[in-house]
Image 1 (spheres, rainbow, N blue to C red):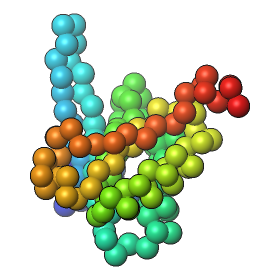
Image 2 (cartoon, helix red, strand yellow):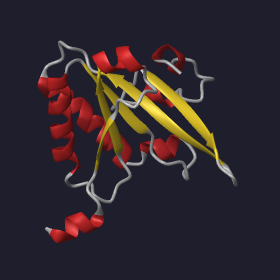
Image 3 (cartoon, rainbow, N blue to C red):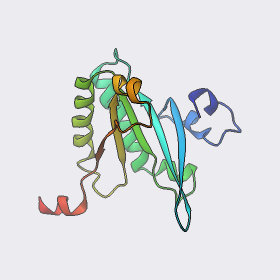
Length: 149
């Protein structure tokens, strides 16, 4: 589903069009069959423009974290459905490093949340595609890591 599809009130992800915090360019679902069940994982893809100032990039990252932390995804979907994995495509390696560091700082207070953010660069997407093994994950620290502090 793309941004244009969110505008359609009949689209299952129409609620993304009405969100004040996030505006992903792409939303897709990947299903995997296990022995007992079929599991679906939802992905939201956000492309960071090369001309976007860093303060806006930081705000965009913060908006996604707040959206997922506040349970807005569950309120619009099945409450048992886990948060989507948010994928950020950064224009350069330097921008990706900045985004990962900023995300780690933003997630320091969110250790008990199931928030998964993946990062890659435009160059890697062009070479391997969205489904390639090109993503670097940043997650909130686990509870036991926080207890050690």
